[in-house]
Image 1: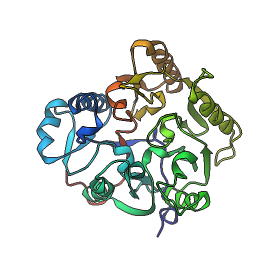
Image 2: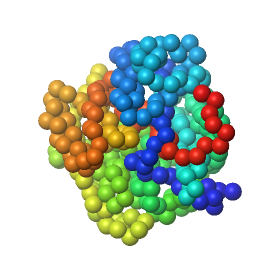
Image 3: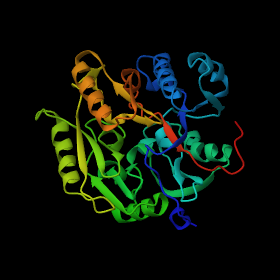
Image 4: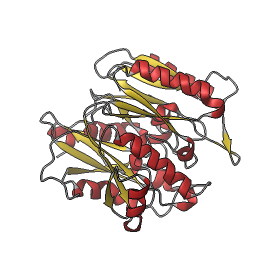
Length: 347
């Protein structure tokens, strides 16, 4: 049976949490400043999250001691082979039903349209994690990364056409067919289709860099005030689409804007800087900041988020080491909601 037929839905990220999953960096060619710089960045984020909830880091067998040492033994470690370190995209998407039972989706993963090889172990990751924790799994029939979708927990999903309709994912499927799969597997009734993500995003426009729900009826989006910046037209189009949209409950959306950081390049490549790649945890918000010429927009973003989440502690973390590899805090994490697990865990 399909998840929707069993009453499962994808919850909002602000709902009560069981733990956070991460993967330890392993693809050395991905990190232009060296993989140790990336590992330091991952460790700092893992320790920030561990103040609020349990963190489980997936690591190759020979790196278990390194993870323990760098994270000061504040995380749990699951020894497992993997190809890369973007848990949002190759990990399971967790579901919950009205009886508070957990399940998870195993999407097909093809490394963002066959951009990196090998990726066979990452394609197996979601199912393996669900099996370790004895969580019911559903094998979805489409290629999809977790960073390409955001939900409000009440039946509304936001995504981008640039990513989900990209022919390097599901070339034989159109919007109608993909919509049907998302409804059946995520328990949603309404999809808001933005056109594109941020300029230069090698994920082909993941939505978690441009828009996310803060709670039902409230969506946050990054904006650009420079008409000469490619992101100006992109983010303006997204704002206009959101203004014209209702959610699954028929509500007009309250739109919260966060100004993008100043443009920054690294080794000739524009970095895809986004405050929207923040990560809610139980009692906190882990938000990437970028320092230097971005100090003003860093502080503005922190202020907006504190007002938006008055009961949560805003924890800024250095986003630069992670964005050099192509993502940020939200990209390297995957939340598991608090719910009933049959049979316990083998950790």
